Length: 281
Length: 289
Image 1 (cartoon, rainbow over the protein chains, first blue to last red):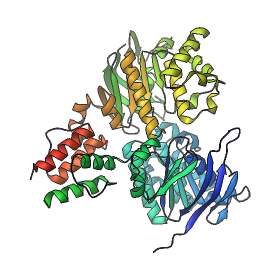
Image 2: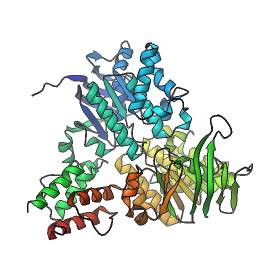
Image 3: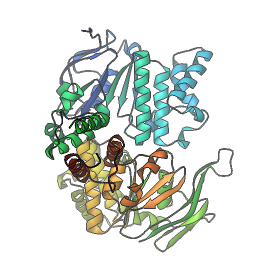
Image 4: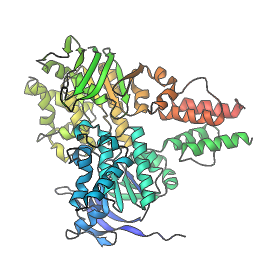
């Protein structure tokens, strides 16, 4: 068995927003492991985004502690921690700072005082990875929401952090753009051993993660592999969530008398089983 | 109220070195009471069209006819208030536009801005808060103490309180959880049915377009690629896939199944229930072997 090395350790964390009667997070105790793709799902207001803010030191835990790459987050070492975590938010308009696409991507690098040649190289490379290299000198307000989001992702990639947090970062992209971006992140994760934390409502996306955490009312409701999580079925619907499309198809076909070995998490897997059993009859 | 676009073109920053053609030769009609979906890639011009519908942008070529009002390229248009009252736009993340101290004041702001009395505006606030599935006690709260989903509903109530004839929705469910998404889509569909509101939905979701729209306009690279009802639009899905567009997941699955099995069903199914019936029947009877 491969030993999993925790890259983020969350210990008994609780958090409350100012003037709010109830806690936004309670009893959060978990590890995030190096190199994994972790999807965090949950209804609106379940605490997913709050958790992301705590990981990046945008908010501090009321109780408990969080360590990133072995370093406990505090006001003193905030900037060291932030070098390790790149964050992409939902709304691209709130995170565009440059006057052109390439200036925007270079912004973070400039803040880190990188040499110009390295900067130019990284800016071009990361824009290429999100397929925005043709837009180098475009102004941000000429880009559509999805295009801006790809630039925001390039900005994070350029900084080469150990962890990337996507806080519903693909929710405003069109389906094709969404797949492109997620494939890009996946490839990067594999090449650079980057850890991906994806906060998402897209259950088809979560189905492809290594592990899923389901949040409900500020607590971790369930943790498991996609296979395990999507066994929950109706329970997920009651939590305001959904099940992946291929699981829906599998269920309906079983109800209609077609035997299947399991509820498939991928469409091609499902079709392959249908094909195989059909031809072995 | 019918809306017609005739050969509409729009260039951002026209006649400057930064000029960029966003849409061209866009023509379509939205007859009164229609539910029309505009779909297309990111950057295909959907949002630019949307901003023409209530004259936030005015065409650089062509014209738009909204009811009795015509907006032509090259003319300085005045008195656009009337159009803006009749066409209610729910922008992406409309909750970002909430600003008042209380929900009631926020909802009343729009109607009062268009000359509705305070008493009438408050009455409309009560009606519209109910329409969006919230209760009256929320009216006294600060919009900023509400959850994201509630804020979205309040912002929508603000648009409904203007009592528009046409409602334009720009990705109204972005960022909502699956249940919230379903609830909001059903809400607009019921309003469309009950009040006969023309509804224009700008979306990436082929599933929503297939489920709710009477008519679909597909935008591609700044112009109309195809227009028709959902059956027509999705009857030749390969064409859409070749354009890099998506097809509803049910049809995508049907195509995958057909190509693996080497068969073809007589039609494309838009409902998962129908498709699984067809697959089950085919597997049991061994058709196509």
